[in-house]
Image (cartoon, rainbow, N blue to C red; front, side, top):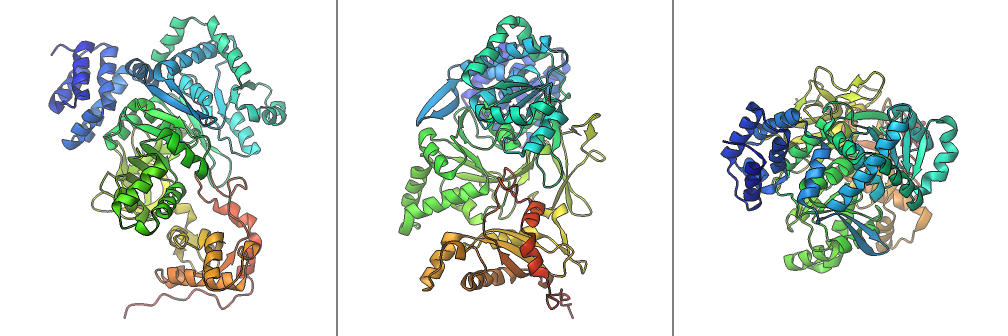
Length: 640
């Protein structure tokens, strides 16, 4: 077979008409690997990998692993980078909308071609800055989600300027640490952060150049690109080493200083093909409504880079609040939403409220769903926390494929995913293509694969794996069908003073299923019994007590008021019946407020930072454990 771009293009046209010959695609892939083939021809073939018909056909023929292995070889052979991918999409989907912004209630849209032109201008400016700078530049981005912040990131990834997105809600101390630790030379900042950055970081970071994203400063930045040779700027795309550090992402973690996790072009590109083979129906017809931060993997890799990979549309939510998301649903009418469990729970509750007394009538329920979500929502993903199985099944029973997923930064985000129509209660799904999972003798989940970060950032780089395996720190098990169940964090295992190992997560998940419990932290490390810190769900508690003829509201609810204590005690007792005696919560304290990101008690993905909570609420903890000799661990009953 004579292979050239025209031949490949014929297969693209056929695939767009849902005509795919799987065996012929495999034959072409092998021929491309065996022969000395023009780089652009290989890239044209790789572009088949974003088409739903191709991915669906590969999956239906049970050839996913073989196909992905061939794609990875072709990526390596042709040095297929994100810049090549984006350039292709800008040509193929020229006038299609890539980005949507919502400005004063109106949707402002930007085409693929328009955004590519913006990337070229920004790349020209960065090229000029690099030439005039005394050393290689390293770009930092410190902004909320916004179009210009995304353009800077995509420019750096496409034209090979090392880039570090910095969490905008980090503490001042941690932001300063990240800037210094990563070696940022040029920092793009949101206008509202400009004064704060100047006041705090410039005195200790004399080499830091700050570029504001306001209109005036942005235009000044872009104008510098006129001094660069456009051809030289374009050539940067091809000057790529697939395994060098392209970007560093910092995780807040639960203790200590932020940790820098490095990613290469190979990590990011291979992950996109792997994701597409897991989500075979996703394509250019899809639109994402996005609020997850672009300084975290799900927002940056799955939503932003994923939208571009599929030729889909990405809409910037105005902010992350639930009320705003509800309004944005009606403006954007998305087909895809990726979210933390809390938002899915809120959507579920809103829909239940609208359907009211007609929850057994499918037509009315689905009408309520369309009214809330804009009418086009088909796909969802819930990750970064526990979501009640009933909520998964509610959406799936009503034509929205809400999938369960599990991931972490070191794995470029996703590690597992439930397949459509294959949800298993409490499972986080099966492994994504291209990754290996193993459970260690201690019960810890280990990972291996081409999109796992190889290094933590340091000088020199620090390997992230041990004997080729990445240790997640999560405890879990895999069933005979390959479904993964995460039971707890290894480092969160509580060891009581009697030597009993207790996993707090299952109890916390069970307790927060109560309508009267908003947040909970189970404690007991090095103590003689297990206890909990509980934040009540204020409105639900007030309504329940009112129905019982007890008048109580406001601050009384968020206190050890006898009526509140009695109500919550009943909930705790019922939940604890499902646990072993030594695991059960023997005592609890009611806290006066919610845990918040602002107070450092939650990560940006709303995970509780246990150490901070215990520090902030040390007084009620000590009160629980002071002078309670009777509350000791009792031995487990033995089988006769």
